[in-house]
Length: 182
View 1 (spheres, rainbow, N blue to C red):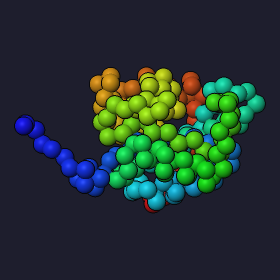
View 2: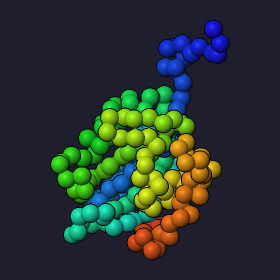
View 3: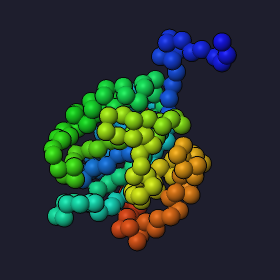
View 4: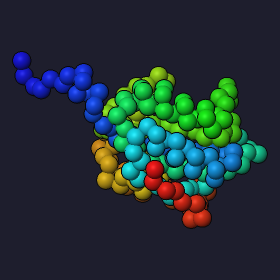
């Protein structure tokens, strides 16, 4: 037998780096801060991006979104993080899921990257393929981990983000909003 075997107990005690995306357009200033604080219950928040304001993708008449990214060091697997932590935080902050995927929301938390893994988690893919298409995802992620190499494309997050001009995409930096690490 070659290689190193990892026992279930060792895997259970291993910490992961989860790169999370947060977005809100209902009481966004309050809900983003609350989400960061609550996520701290499931690990240690290592870094948080600046807050970016951006127009809704689809849903005219909605308020703009506030978006941010953070790195959470957590003992949870990607599946447990989604099913335990994220659903709990979103529920506590009044997230209501509807058939309209672009409906306004109090908070939306997605796992964009998880360690250096490529994972299918229900209907979601990690790394999130929209990192390559959406500036409000790529730019905050590049702020917190510019040298992270995308496990599919081989590009750094800084390289991916450099393809987008925030102003041309309707994004603006909200320097009036900052977070504390929890």
